[in-house]
Length: 190
Length: 190
DNA sequence: GTCTATAATAGGATAGAC
DNA sequence: GTCTATCCTATTATAGAC
Image (tube, each protein chain N blue to C red):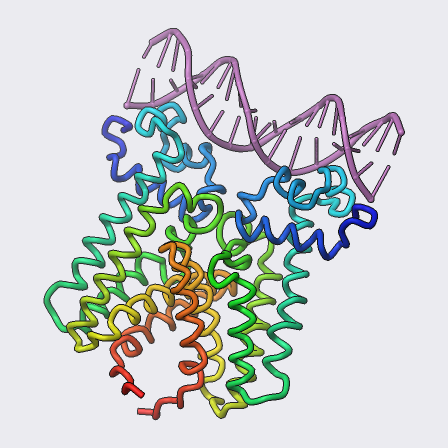
């Protein structure tokens, strides 16, 4: 990396910022270079396969961030409600209260999906699994997985709509509703 | 247009297909040309400002499609439940059962949002208003708007997740749940 | 209105000096 | 490891013939 200026982690974090704002197709090497303070050649030194390598690194980084900040805590100690509320807090923070778009959404759309299929799927999978585990602990066994999927959809959709409507409060409201709706008692079998 | 080959509407529809798949940043003029069967120069003849004009036309077209197929029917005759179920059917069809990405989502992400802010907001707004009207008819006055926003979020999020997980059944399930969840009796004021 | 040809530029990627 | 300089290709956009 730039000698002692930026750690690799810091560099990947800056790259993530660009991908988050502009997506794979919209993120030019010029921007990635500017955001990291590294010349194009330096970027290629660390990411020989170019943009693809950079975004792969971004997804690896994101995955490990989410694992320690979201997935693991969802299985950790505390009540299911407390763990879900912690997730909500973390997401609100991570997405700047709804101001920042979703890295995952941006990579699912555009032309990038085929390139990062596996990584994207793996991250969504882990998220859903961890949430389902928390919901199972809350006694929602039979509906836990469906509810977990629902939660992820809501978060993704809330980010889209908050940006589409230019109204971050939509994201905040969706997050605030999440715990109660996920933890509501399962409906009677008809 | 190509004399009698394609109507303007048909051309815009083909353009929409490309934008839907690849987004604004990922849609090249070469692809747009190929999809419409029009040479680049012909495209510029109809859309002098280039890609921006084309996507503006796509959004106009989408807006009028949605108006007649979704928004108007939501206010039309029939029970609120029937109208919402009709919307679900239409959306399922429009998004190919979850196989096709969302045009709106694709334009909200990437670098295109600032270019189409107003149109995007207008479409989301009309959608939410129409849905809220149906929910108000169902006696959900105080929560109608919030529920309508929720529904749009779910649809957008379901499309993202279905693509991120490579599993279209997620979209189908989300759609199927929608009517019941939107029409559930409003919770007691605590 | 549509085409071929071409301009102009931006994008991704590499070479080679330091 | 980083930079400057450069290459090549794709991309947007236009000119001008038909």
